[in-house]
Image (tube, rainbow, N blue to C red; front, side, top):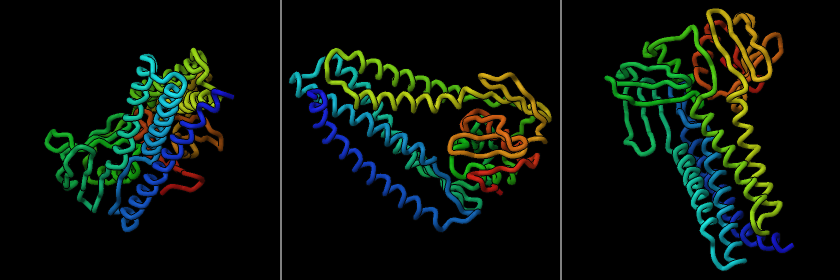
Length: 321
């Protein structure tokens, strides 16, 4: 019982404070977003980073903050000081906490407001820009994002996870700003995202193994549960990025998964696409033939191609126009 009692104090001190901050910040963000978007129509809309980015940053901050508080208080309670090895761990956790804070702030501050042909671009750590869509020289499609330029200068970069991405890309396409369309391309996991998720998984597994092999009795079921959850969470987001590869060649879509052989389907035989929170499902005759992450490379090319072919898009059972 001693280790459990020793952890009660930091849990009681750290977690309520953390959750109080979470509630306050989430209330502020939700109210602000509602106020900004309630008067916008189809020609006047707002693009924001997905809420997922914000909550990942906040939850990551809360998680690391709680662990830091637990380690500091339990070490001082049991030994009256903190060893150099623990200081290294605290420093690493501190970097993760700062990264979480940065991600949360970045997702709040990132915003592009579209008012007919006018753009108001608000990027973190940059001056607010107001430009006209007609002033944009060209927009390049690069993997899962669109990048806008004015006279060779990069003005904005928007990936397909941004709310309003499809609407804005259509508007740019109608204005003749999109550089090109691809007929043959491959969809696979974004290397940067895969590398980050692999690193997160390794870190989570390392923390779990370290807590099990910890040379004292301060770690218990609470710590094991936290690191186990972190491991499962990291694995959950890694698998969709690597389990499926697709290629579009002429009028066919070629699908290859980790456990299945390569199969090809005529694009016209696809029955629908279903958008989930983070994944996209492809159906043929009511059966799912592929599931891939929404942030994979070249997803925007696939959506554009299937839209031109008349394949219906669904989200939560509702047809998207």
